Length: 264
Image (cartoon, rainbow, N blue to C red; front, top):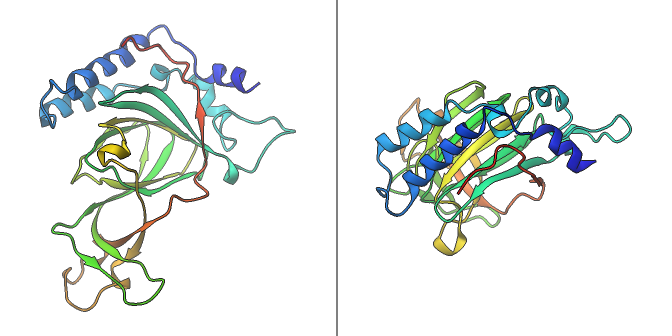
């Protein structure tokens, strides 16, 4: 039943292959070692302009899936086998995973959360395919401003500046984050059932120093010592971030991509 349900949602369309194939081809051109490293702003602009044109059907999502999963998760549940939507997982769908870039989708039931996390040394392009998503994102303040607490159990924190705090609703333009700007540390909260198409370049790789680290944010006033690092009236634009363990309630399951095949 699970496989049948996936096939019902991720199906091929006649006009889709050129769109997702063109996206893959441009990613390969932009992010391979022979390309400019890091990619030029013109190359990134060309890529996100193409990503702007991608919709649910281009990755095999049928229109009726937008109705089927309303409040019941991406793959739906029968009346006899429903689970509470708060307990439902985010579905991760791999489109392409390579050494230089990854193309993938995250499919959220309502209220699902991907907690605050970073993308070290990475450029990430994100496109909300359908639904509404709250995005909150930070960039580190440079040079690094770190506070070490003398109290046992209190975290060591680092100062970050708020870059994004808004609800994004499809069809919305592609967002781009960079290693040191654009909101490299972000969290997602699904306002409605939604799906996000991501391009990560280069992908996470712990051996290369690109490990996904999770954080908790604290209001600026929580660790301010009266030394006026931030000017009066700007406190709401800053927060202190503390490293935390990978959240135990971060629940993701793999989904099978059934959209147009990508020719490598």
